[in-house]
Image (tube, rainbow, N blue to C red; front, side, top):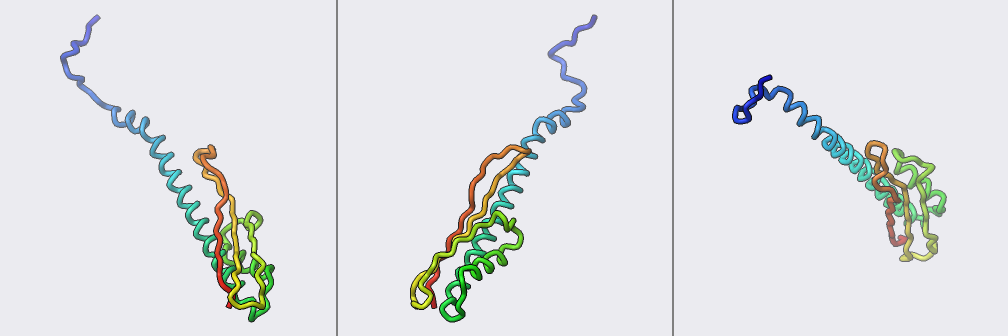
Length: 135
């Protein structure tokens, strides 16, 4: 039985790269999935912010066009076509529609959940509120 002398260098390092990649790959995949989930979350936030802005803009012209809160909600939902409409919540503050200069507030809420490989890392609600003055 021969024993290897520990002072001699290892002759072959074949497979070392594959082993190192196998150790690092799960972390890289998780990082990539986290970046993807955060991108989706940011897209949803921008969508509800734009929808709240569109709803508030529709509400501020209510004094002239006799717009109802239901029509404002319809405008908000139309501005967020990529979101699940059953989960989208819209609250329209009831302004005094005959008084110019009063404020109207539109709040849009949408739930989110960050899932990485089936595990929920974070969940909650995205909320955007827009306040405009009636014209």
